[in-house]
Image 1 (tube, one colour):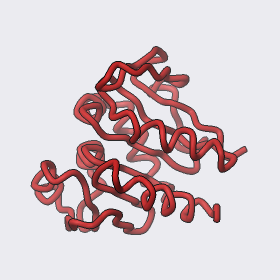
Image 2 (cartoon, rainbow, N blue to C red; image 1 turned 30 degrees about the horizontal axis):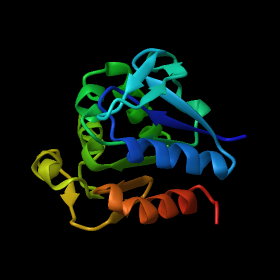
Image 3 (cartoon, rainbow, N blue to C red; image 1 turned 90 degrees about the vertical axis):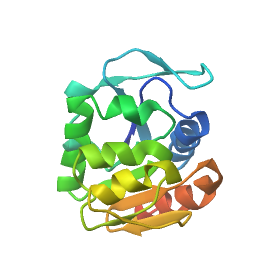
Length: 169
């Protein structure tokens, strides 16, 4: 069974994590939740989700994709060198990287947006542009192995594109 990584940290946005988590399982993928350490993380509203893999143990070779939810969690994620390394390795291997809302902060920290098209929650537009991205105000933007979306309302199109890129119709 192919594996997808879902990054997690405290203050994640509930639907931006849980919709991909369950939808990818429905599509036949094993979803490993990767956090700074193996423990339970709480969403912005206190909903718990347990990381099953510590970031220091995560290897891009083991995964076909990584999904990065938004909320305030990406501000914490980008401070963890192992999470950032993992995202950079996934990009170096040309594997699917999906980021929604504030998850663009992790892409900036991994230095993988220079010269690439993407979208995000509007408040981090300048951060992405300053990192060299070509920001677009579109529900979903695809640039090679990078799939980005703005907000929870974009989840239907975002998930459809992720599944399409993973070869699921």
